[in-house]
Image (cartoon, rainbow, N blue to C red; front, side, top):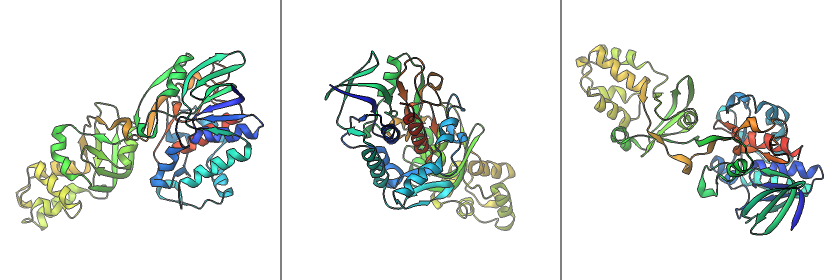
Length: 393
């Protein structure tokens, strides 16, 4: 049997950050993970360059049943703190749109940085380790694994959620929380492409690959101004991934496909000045050709402009500036970047991340009911929650 002060389950962003901080405090620290390589989600993130944080990160960029929960951690370990760490390791980075920070070279640099920090602090990482049982014992916790038994005083769950199961993601953290009596906010896929039913797909499927940048996508009172992309299953792109975290089944979304143009005014002007021109030819000046042709076809008004009434022009303009569509679902965890929901924040301390019902048990990162927007926010939550927890375990 192996005993240590701290055991962290999950060698991802939050788990490794927590391990660094725990070990720095002189706490013997072991990280266990069932994967054969650490931090696989970091490796594939940002197109292989890791969108490691966002300079505009604030509590307003996170979804949770308790929107105040994330404030303490984000304040104690913020964006500049992580940038300082990246700079200390001489990792070159750049800012892209909307405050997103990426490595110039490779996401593997962030992984190496974390592993080097763990090594320097004395934290041990043990991979290919399957947790078979977790139990409370006097003075801590015991884990039964395929590598034997481990005991610790403090147990940290940093296993993330079930998004991208091909990377080994599971709902293990939720099961541990339930075992110790903690409430779970029902998880669902977030930052995920949305799908259409067969009737809508009949109109959009052959538009797959066409992108609109920028567009405005709205659900309820929430709006995002980024790109959208038609797919063979429905619709994707950054604006759609963002709105998916707010969308619920049965909701409409409204998309402005030409946000820089008042299409009704343009169409009325064309009716006067280009009366013989066919509708789709007018639209193609403002939209990709195939999309323009499809909108004109679906409207049923692909005629000379002179033949179109105000009512018909309004209908066409609405299909462009206020396209209202009801997705029938999402692509689910298979392609979701995160899982919304998770361990109820009412069950854990916002300062220490310790479970109120089970002293010595901690939950950090994605497994907690705190989910960021697309664009580096979820990594910042991992760094912040991991760092704060590491000061306490």
